[in-house]
Amino acid sequence: MKQVRNRNPYWDLMILAEEPSALLRYWQQGTLWSFAHRDSCRAVALMMDYVRDPQSIIELKLLAVGAKWRGQGIGRHFIQELALRYSALGYVQMVVGTANCSVGNLAFYQKAGMRMRWIEADYFVADHGYSEPIVENGIEGRDKVWFDMRLTPKGRD
Ligand SMILES: CC(C)(COP(=O)(O)OP(=O)(O)OC[C@H]1O[C@@H](n2cnc3c(N)ncnc32)[C@H](O)[C@@H]1OP(=O)(O)O)[C@@H](O)C(=O)NCCC(=O)NCCS
Image (tube, rainbow, N blue to C red):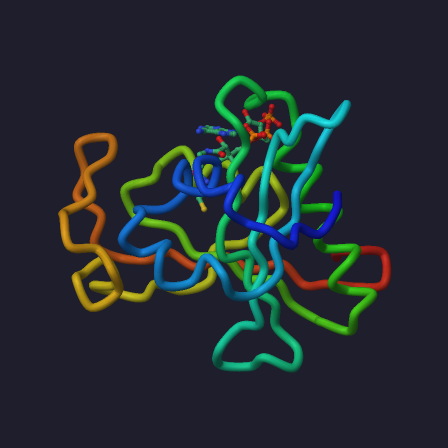
């Protein structure tokens, strides 16, 4: 994986994981990583210091694997690589939040080694950039479900 400086070419990949109106608020912040194979970018991850404890907690703010590359273990591998990298930087925990209606993501993050920790109720509202209702799997997206992973020198527990 490598760090990206000019983010413009990655916008289309990033909006696979976030509503454009919300993404616009933070897409130039934090550190953007790309995961490439044979010079073709297959996935991106945006990492930001977690606002409530920026010294020791890193937030996986966004993760997107290109549609044709999904289901091959890239997402899980990317999370393992990020865990290694950020543990080496001294972070002790990695967190990620996703919508209650994103049933596939709730499964994926658990399979990638993360634990469900807490719920931020009524997150998906206009104040956070979600002007239109989000609906997936016939469920309205209202609450943010937070996951975490403890980081150790080997990457994770
Ligand atoms: C969610 C996402 C990152 C998963 O990436 P991926 O590379 O396809 O996932 P992996 O191949 O590493 O999957 C790891 C495991 O999770 C499972 N998994 C992945 N996506 C899943 C889904 N939507 N539903 C159920 N299980 C899923 C895989 O089947 C695999 O399980 P296995 O070990 O039993 O085979 C990818 O689908 C994606 O980019 N989606 C669109 C953007 C998005 O929603 N991002 C997350 C929110 S920020």
